[in-house]
Length: 99
Image (cartoon, rainbow, N blue to C red; front, side):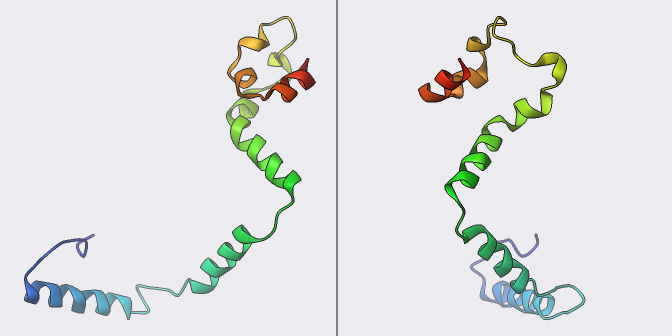
Protein backbone atom coordinates (compact mmCIF):
# COMPACT_ATOMS: atom_id res chain seq x y z
CA UNK A 1 0.00 0.00 0.00
CA UNK A 2 2.91 2.34 0.67
CA UNK A 3 3.82 2.23 -3.01
CA UNK A 4 0.39 3.50 -3.97
CA UNK A 5 1.32 7.19 -3.78
CA UNK A 6 1.76 10.07 -6.15
CA UNK A 7 4.83 12.26 -6.10
CA UNK A 8 6.34 14.75 -8.51
CA UNK A 9 9.60 14.65 -6.60
CA UNK A 10 12.21 12.72 -8.63
CA UNK A 11 14.12 11.50 -5.59
CA UNK A 12 10.97 10.14 -3.93
CA UNK A 13 9.92 8.44 -7.17
CA UNK A 14 13.34 6.83 -7.62
CA UNK A 15 13.34 5.61 -4.01
CA UNK A 16 9.87 4.10 -4.48
CA UNK A 17 11.07 2.39 -7.69
CA UNK A 18 14.13 0.98 -5.89
CA UNK A 19 11.88 -0.30 -3.09
CA UNK A 20 9.45 -1.85 -5.58
CA UNK A 21 12.28 -3.60 -7.47
CA UNK A 22 13.71 -4.89 -4.20
CA UNK A 23 10.37 -6.47 -3.29
CA UNK A 24 9.70 -7.67 -6.87
CA UNK A 25 13.02 -9.49 -7.07
CA UNK A 26 12.84 -11.07 -3.58
CA UNK A 27 11.80 -14.71 -4.09
CA UNK A 28 10.85 -14.95 -0.39
CA UNK A 29 8.19 -12.24 -0.80
CA UNK A 30 6.89 -13.04 -4.27
CA UNK A 31 5.99 -16.01 -6.40
CA UNK A 32 5.48 -16.46 -10.13
CA UNK A 33 1.78 -17.08 -10.78
CA UNK A 34 1.88 -16.54 -14.54
CA UNK A 35 1.13 -20.19 -15.44
CA UNK A 36 -1.79 -20.34 -13.01
CA UNK A 37 -3.26 -17.10 -14.36
CA UNK A 38 -2.88 -18.28 -17.97
CA UNK A 39 -4.54 -21.60 -17.12
CA UNK A 40 -7.51 -19.78 -15.56
CA UNK A 41 -7.81 -17.43 -18.54
CA UNK A 42 -7.79 -20.39 -20.95
CA UNK A 43 -10.53 -22.05 -18.92
CA UNK A 44 -12.68 -18.92 -18.98
CA UNK A 45 -12.33 -18.39 -22.73
CA UNK A 46 -12.82 -21.98 -23.89
CA UNK A 47 -15.86 -22.81 -25.97
CA UNK A 48 -18.87 -23.61 -23.83
CA UNK A 49 -22.10 -25.12 -25.08
CA UNK A 50 -25.15 -22.86 -25.18
CA UNK A 51 -26.82 -25.28 -22.77
CA UNK A 52 -24.04 -24.84 -20.19
CA UNK A 53 -24.18 -21.05 -20.53
CA UNK A 54 -27.97 -21.19 -20.08
CA UNK A 55 -27.64 -23.28 -16.90
CA UNK A 56 -24.93 -21.00 -15.51
CA UNK A 57 -27.12 -17.97 -16.23
CA UNK A 58 -30.11 -19.57 -14.51
CA UNK A 59 -28.00 -20.52 -11.53
CA UNK A 60 -26.65 -16.99 -11.12
CA UNK A 61 -30.12 -15.48 -11.44
CA UNK A 62 -31.75 -17.81 -8.93
CA UNK A 63 -28.95 -19.02 -6.64
CA UNK A 64 -30.25 -17.08 -3.62
CA UNK A 65 -33.69 -18.57 -4.13
CA UNK A 66 -32.27 -22.08 -4.56
CA UNK A 67 -30.35 -21.86 -1.29
CA UNK A 68 -33.54 -21.01 0.61
CA UNK A 69 -35.82 -23.58 -1.00
CA UNK A 70 -36.75 -26.75 0.80
CA UNK A 71 -39.49 -29.31 0.44
CA UNK A 72 -41.50 -27.43 3.07
CA UNK A 73 -41.55 -24.11 1.23
CA UNK A 74 -41.85 -25.09 -2.46
CA UNK A 75 -44.22 -22.67 -4.15
CA UNK A 76 -47.56 -24.24 -4.96
CA UNK A 77 -49.96 -22.90 -7.58
CA UNK A 78 -52.35 -21.35 -5.07
CA UNK A 79 -49.77 -19.43 -3.07
CA UNK A 80 -49.56 -16.30 -5.26
CA UNK A 81 -46.33 -17.40 -6.95
CA UNK A 82 -47.07 -14.95 -9.76
CA UNK A 83 -46.30 -12.14 -7.33
CA UNK A 84 -42.81 -13.44 -6.53
CA UNK A 85 -39.46 -11.98 -7.57
CA UNK A 86 -38.64 -15.18 -9.46
CA UNK A 87 -41.85 -15.00 -11.49
CA UNK A 88 -41.08 -11.43 -12.50
CA UNK A 89 -37.63 -12.45 -13.78
CA UNK A 90 -39.03 -15.10 -16.15
CA UNK A 91 -39.56 -14.60 -19.87
CA UNK A 92 -43.02 -15.20 -21.32
CA UNK A 93 -42.15 -18.65 -22.66
CA UNK A 94 -40.80 -19.60 -19.21
CA UNK A 95 -44.00 -18.41 -17.52
CA UNK A 96 -45.96 -20.50 -20.03
CA UNK A 97 -43.84 -23.52 -19.08
CA UNK A 98 -44.51 -22.96 -15.37
CA UNK A 99 -48.24 -22.69 -15.91
